[in-house]
Amino acid sequence: MRKKFFGVCSILAALPVIGAAFLTGCGKQVVQEIPELIEAVGVDMDTAEVIRMDLKGIVSYPAQIVPRIEEIAFLSSGSIDELKVSIGDHVKKGQLLATLSGTSGKAKALQEEINNLKAANEDVNKQSQYDLDMLRENKKSLQKQLSGAKNSRMKKGLKQQITEAEEDIKIGEERLKQQRELQQMELRQKEVELAEAKASAKNSKLYSPIQGEVVGTSGGNGYMVQGGNTAVQVANMEAPRIRSGYISGTKLAKASRYVALVEGKEYAVEVEEQELDREAIERGEYPSNTWFDFVDKNVSVSVGGSATIDLYTDAVEGALVVPYNAVFGNGEEKYVYLVEGDAKIKTAVKTGTETDAYVQITTGVKEGDVVYVED
Image (cartoon, rainbow, N blue to C red; front, top):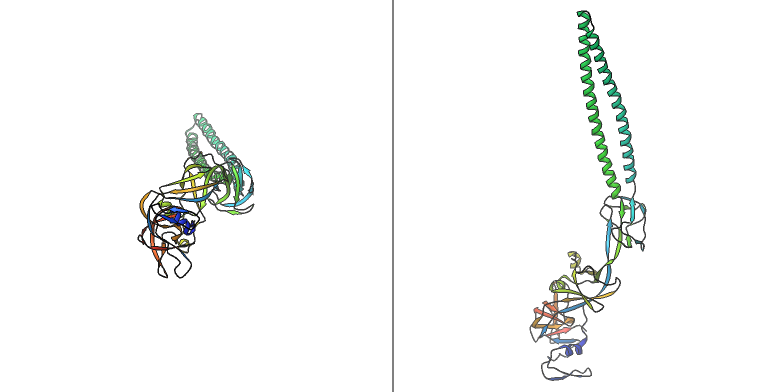
């Protein structure tokens, strides 16, 4: 946000004291020796001379204390079955905010299917075990008959039957073993599906991680949402942060520290990284806000109150300076208008330390140059 320079009288009053008296024409005498401002050159405009002075950069921006907004999202995609809150509602930590449709029913159906499958497997296995037991009883009966057989022909026939019974028993045991293994494989697969369904059902329920106030929702019942996309916004009134108008990355980078002034008390703050769209910047479109977080997370400030963000830069001795509103441009492109005769010449410059009244010029002009000052 550009700070407007308050005219010729303000320029004169702000220049350093050197020793001679000068009548400002603003109703008082200031003991100064300053470069004389050039009168209007063919048109009505204010000018100022490029001078040297010591600077200690402090640039201030009005700001507001706002709550941290918690962006809450479903982990799964689907349609909202029930949105249980509205904008303006106060919610508690752990409170259910919304659910997705269809997921809990699937888990319930799978659990019922698993229960039925286990019961059916138990019945099948009981029958197979009974058949196997009958084969074993038959073998015992044949062995008993063999022990009481009187002739070799009968004995030979019984031995053959016993051998066949033993083969039947082996086949029955192997069949029962394979049957149980297949049943376990099927059950494990169903249990995996059940675990996934339960996880999906859990992910389909949206709970508030904080106590706060609902300030936004993505839609109502039946609205389709994507997993990971914000569904409900909750303002955490116990976690204040600061919002200012947009401050360029150049100005932020030049600052050695950031301070928030709230009700006369200073708080250390840190700036949130700004995501900038380079194409939008090239079109002159900048973000609306810059955000700051308190370094101390337990500060005693009230959400909704006002604040001032001060950017401090290192002190510079003998800096080449011009009034703040003599510098134009955004981002990295800065320029001044050098006044030569009746002409205003656009001249690219690089800037350094800034205050609310002055900007240090590191390249582009020299001491004694005259620049146009926006009124």
